Length: 226
Image (tube, rainbow, N blue to C red; front, side, top):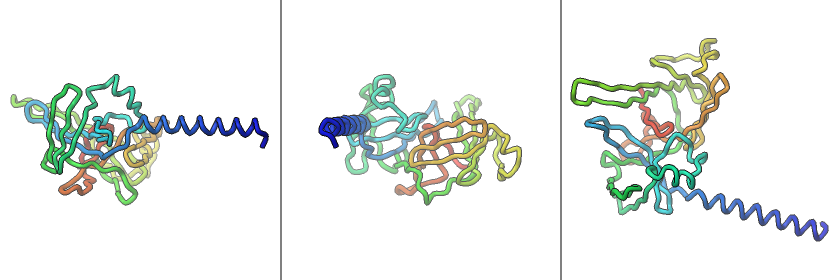
């Protein structure tokens, strides 16, 4: 290799490595995914997933997968989603962007570990998202949407559950159906009409940090199996 070519090659290698290191430094290392119970007024309760980073910051997971999120930009544009955290034994102390402090005891009923998808886990059945609650004045606000995971590849969305078969032209021609794939904390939906949507994903937990397939988080929203 000629000297000037070798020098150029070494320079390009240095630049690429430097850029890769800078990119790696932009995304802090994850310390774990968790979810907490949050209360509406006066009695509605739902859950939200949170990512804790090893640098002592946390991020309230939104629709986008973490890998697709510009975290540096989010800190500027969405400071309400960020804060700091500390842990002492089973107690997690979170301080939000406004300086408010919240303490959570692991598995006490309001703070749990969340799990990524793994190849040994089967996701099958109808999951519904329900928000709203009894507001104390005989009024019940309800929003419901369903996702039916037919097997480890196919899904459909429906207003009502009970769909058990996808081997029909109706499913193939349904724009609200398609295939899906999950990679750890990212789920990708490939719709029959060509749409491709990616969302954050996590499993809930049951008891002492046991993975619970009856509760999942998609795009930061809670879905439970029917």
